[in-house]
Image (cartoon, rainbow, N blue to C red; front, side, top):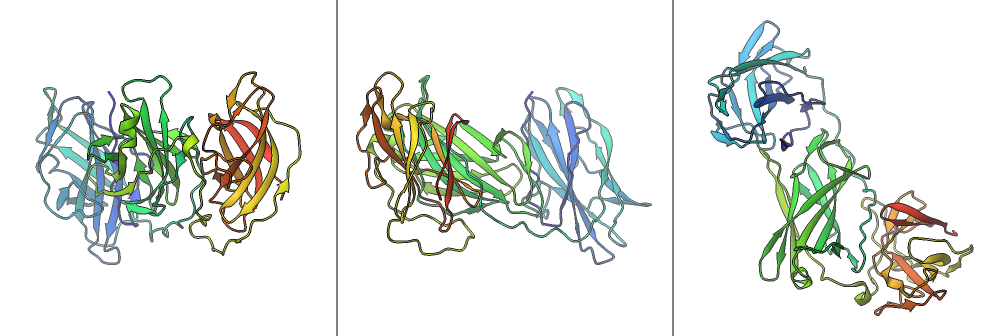
Length: 466
């Protein structure tokens, strides 16, 4: 059966996580050592807080009471210590009483055991003996078991907090609708992660169905702790609120780490990941009624958080208007005032390149106070009439800083001042000019290449004159 995972709580920086938790125990109830944290390490009465994952491998619920693991002990050298308290932690606060609860089938909870030690803080491994009695009955079977786990000793001062830099780029792109940037581009702290809603994409599933119209949200997240955080399928979720107050929960949430879809993984200190959440709607009218999006970080047994953003109105590509906002500097980068006059366009060279849609050739590159404009000559060689704005491919600009930048999702004519408000149809062998605006290229960064991709597969790479 599928077992859902939970993140070890956002501990203080001095927590020492186990690299790969190993479960042991009866097949229907297993436990694993997750982390240890030492307090008052400079005294002769330090404390050890040991975090243990308890997994219910069945489809049935099981009760956990204050007596279930009362016999658990920690052996440090010749000394044996009983736990002074144990509880379901919230964050790294393990104070308070252990409340009784029911562990649903297929779920995992974190239990924190506190031990009051005597003598210097242990630097050598100690032994945690997990004793479960009275037994938890699952599927009519009793789990009386005793397990031993090696607990790492104290290793010294914690690593410094990670430097919070700029995330890499990831593309969203669907045919028929504009890709919108949200108005709130700031990061929000949700538990150990700082999260920003970066882009909202509207689309329609080719196969149709009950919820064929959908909104897809791209968010960027970074681990701000100096320890790893376990990410799993329900760590981040969202709700779209309509103008009538109706709620639509996310249908599908995907995590991307290093450009690859991942399910359960450890996000190391300072590492970035992307999150996409899709929300289905029965028709376009319901999709257009979406007004607010709430993004939540809510792992089990841990304090979470929520922030909300406005949802840009649905705009089909033929209805789009040019972006007039100035280019945004990269977070943390030194900002400078962009030029207020348009730089002269640089004529492009080379033959037409074949792509998945129309053939393209570089026509010119311009730097304006709205960003970098790349103008292409496009030619219809498909053999039938095509709409110039119906190109589903993604266009990515590579900068001299090594970063990749997305276009603003709109289509323009000979420049970004030439908004294409109606479809431009090209017959076979007809040509026209099409411009892409890259509004988020920082000042001082020059474009080096334009990459055209179809469903992630590179179709053309064009060198840009400097």
